[in-house]
Image (cartoon, rainbow, N blue to C red; front, side):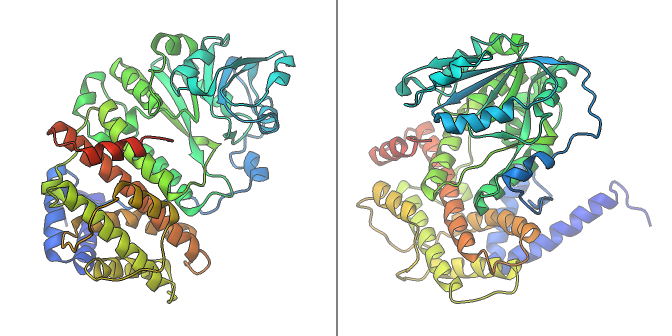
Length: 482
């Protein structure tokens, strides 16, 4: 049998797409399927790809150095001269642990550490070390871009490596491998390793990191500088993705471009400029940096909001219209839908706490089914998230809740939850022992989702001169503290 214009891999994709469509119709209804299908075709996304990951365990810190083991007999072709710039507000004890890790890096001819201290701790003891430079600045002067530039201005190495003070190299060859990529590839403007979560990372942190790594690998490709503006927003983000948790540059390249004076997204903004000038941004997947934080829902809400606002400016991409995509035509309608989604999530979690399900798939099926049911039902939930309660009271103060039938935004959130479901299928046999963490994770992921939606809505409101006093206040609250 011959299949013209296709191949077996495409057949598999088509088969998977049909299965996804049938499952979607069962859970969300045929009219909702038609709506989302039109949007998908319009955006040019014809095949559904799941967000599964390969990792199944998360080692403890004492196991990290065996996570990405070096070859039995490491042959260092060169010994590099590296300046490690670390913005910090940590104390001496925290940094001492980090220093012992940094100084164990192999393949370094010379290695200096430049601390830019914007905290209240006295770090003068580090000045006694011959290979350490200390720069003290007032806390209010800290800026993600210019503070790093200040540290780089004191660098004497051929390579400048930026690292946060809470990140741990996965093994003793990480710095060498980063420098080697730059040394062997003149067109490489910057190289970063992927992140790997700490052993105490919560569910949502593990998922976000794993999904981000998968996202970068999916779109990891070389592009011509003059084609950047024609890329999708995902492709733009992927090909310009520098990660300041750990990022390495040739000194002559970085000092020419420098970071911009911005408080968020300074790494991606520099990546865009480098790509447009013909450089490539590299990510290594054979080594990693250990880094994660357990944040509350309010942090994720603010992060989602800030990412929407900043990356729309950096990447030069506008978002879809709310009226056509979600059938939401006013600020009041959006607030009402978000309140109804939060209520339905709380009632669903109340229900889940009374049941026990055999596997991850059945748990998420119940989440989808009951969230849509409770969206239309009045009820007083017992479950809640303190930080989301706080922000709803803060930004929706005085807003009168009324019933709404506009469920498309909830369905978009439930579709996004499919990524967490796939992640859990790969990493947890069931939700039995992680049910409490799952409930908290749902709140946190809703916070992230809600933040992105509010950011996108505010961008559209500015475009059409529809920004109100309430939206101005929301922007002020959500842009602080990220």
